[in-house]
Length: 302
Image (cartoon, rainbow, N blue to C red):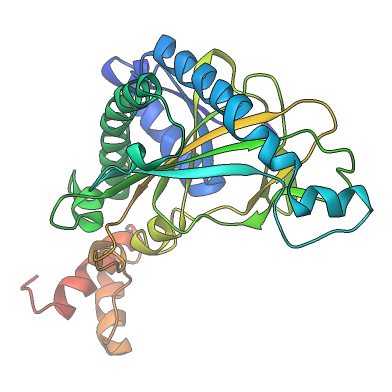
């Protein structure tokens, strides 16, 4: 399967309609896709990866390999734990990056610059999704917002070499709880897999710092099931230590989430009323009939 690639540079030219259609298809039928020409500085992305890798080598690697999980696996014992070394950084509404143990001032500055650019991309992407769903431009952003807007945070993870990959997952099968996930991942080491049509699709390492995107549970709920969250996992490997920097554009903790009313089917009507409308619109688009019934349901004149 060829994973959809959305070229954001095409959105401002004659190929905009085609690109928007591809984005809608990727969200509707896949739940994951790659974005190129996204507007985030690729040299900055490369610097982020390099500095995160150094932070792991200097402060986290030794601790990981001394863990009880690693000792147990060396004896052939498995557990429900995930074969990863990770930490989480909140960016919005309040930053927690300064609380990360042993984090350098340079990494804080670099990460903040990256996240600032990525947040603009996330907002633009959510607006494009709204357009494809037939919602007002900032519907997702507003639905996700608390007093200070949507939540924004990053899970930084390393998936170290594993001598018994058949016994452990880097990260077990799951869907993401939040909204829109933006992944800056390793450009050499594989491991990420997504489930599509009953088959596991290996996600190749990201070349040229493309951003890998997947949709979470809250977007599925908001879109009334149109943009579904996809099951995924991370496999362990014997050779190579995979890097994952996943940033989440999520609802604020106190945001109230429900399906967008515009995306709900009509309800609460008598079948005879539908048949009466059908008799005059049988050879038209059913979507227009549904829209008319919804307007009647809401008491609007038609």
